[in-house]
Image 1 (spheres, rainbow, N blue to C red):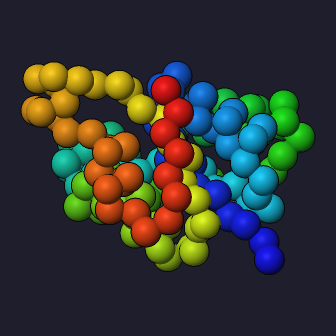
Image 2: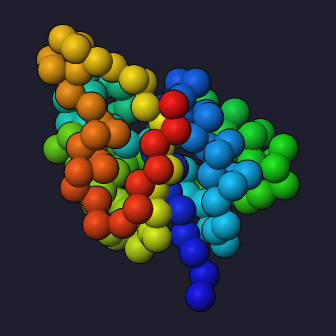
Length: 131
């Protein structure tokens, strides 16, 4: 049975750490890297459509090459970033999610919410949070 792991990605150090963790420690036949965009971001032009690829995907591929692993990449959107991640995970049938955490606490977390927390609470599959 093949295993598929999803790594949600943005242009942050915690996300890169999660990717490196997945590539080094998680036994998976397929690693999918997804940049999720919420409707609010899409409305303000962060990513115009799923056909646009963020520039940091070049770094993502370079990291995968360092580990001699192949990855697939995608840009997805949804009502919110957590929703987009979970919908993609269901759609492609991943076995686990490995993601970074910005480590927000206190007022920032209350105001902004935590994508990692939302994904962890709502996912029906294992989620590993990498600091």
